[in-house]
Image (cartoon, rainbow, N blue to C red; front, side, top):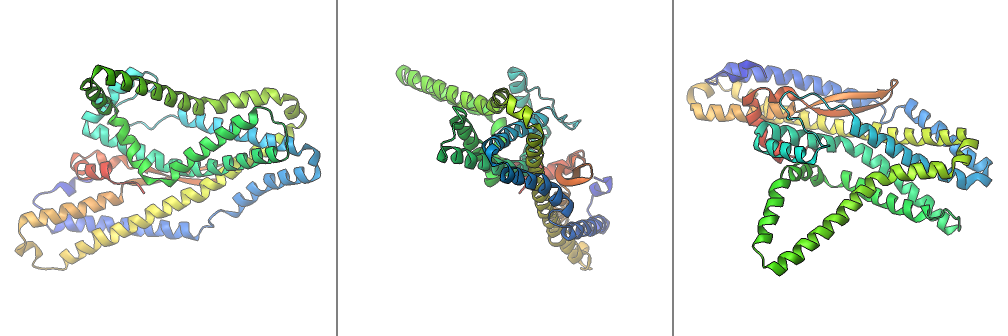
Length: 391
């Protein structure tokens, strides 16, 4: 933030400075909001681009019904490939460089726990970790909703196989369980707001939680400790196996299915490619619509904050000729701090656009790192970062 915001004692110029800045920010936010609202919810070019390969898939089924089951199997394989590619890209995507954020090596468990402990003790590091954790989970919602739809269709296809007595072998039950699990997980990601709030915090508190459990166990009798420890061990193994299965099963199943249906894919490669592209574009369309929705929601919130909590109070203060002469210094500073807090809150996120060759424009919200470079600004925002939800 500009150094002029730190001037003391607080006077008319400080309020006027924020009034001028917030007025310009409000105008820009209103223009961006109006421009985004004028756009089609989903651009016609994106709709047409998505419709063409999926219409082709329907035509394939209508004009080549004898290969219906093959095309439905291709859909399932495509969904696994798509999940594998998107997950891999997310894992290996280069993170943004943060000067104030501690480096975390998740490949080394001991090093990872050590860094989490350091982060939880360092206020700025903890705030950064929480802010980016919440931001990541919020931006993950469109992805989660899109794949919830894809894997719901997988379950419908597998039920169709069962009803029509099509022999898909052991893959039927395995893929159905995987699809159901992923559908539930993805559904939870976007349905429950508290997930985005509590997960980063619980990760930082992991070491404390484990220590509390260990202390409680040590206070029990030897027999109870034996029962509890074995229960926790078995439960931990089950959870670990479940998590590893959900992580690696799409990769393993993709390879097995590609090998098993190698001949069919090679003889119907064009059809398989069309199905894969069609499914990928469906995911992009979901993301185009939903990222636009979340950005509009943020802009609407930003406009409300600037109007109601920044500009209106400042105008009331500046229009009062006796405010600075008859109000005590402590009350002036308190009002300024509150207004400044709301102004900083309105600047929490930056909007970034990504696209596919100019089409399928998606918008992401990124934490505005400039706000935490100034220690005074950081102190004002610290409580908000830790306690408030992004949405």
